[in-house]
Image (cartoon, rainbow, N blue to C red; front, top):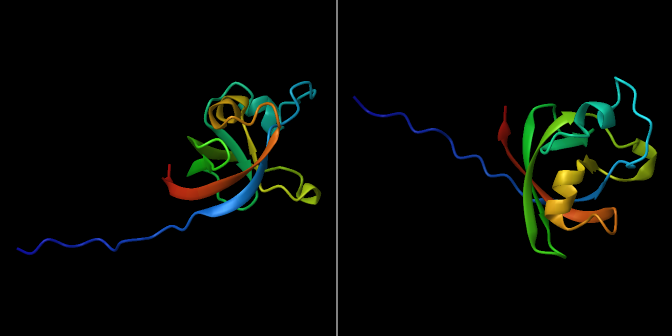
Length: 110
């Protein structure tokens, strides 16, 4: 019996502007900040489906992190594509700036 080969799917890395939600924001139960502020892997995005696992790379610092899209955001009028948790921001070395251009690659889906 012949084994089936699965198709190879290539995912291109795209650059996206990312930010950290304000640490003193007053969360409600429905906001991303409230549901993810303590989650180490949380990412909010309008461009990727909920449950998408993303590889994030900050070329400026050379740091890498993996996150999961768990909510929608940031506000569309800001021009940013992602909000990341403080834990991811710390791994990527963007706490001091609050905003960074990241290379984003889809790793998979949960």
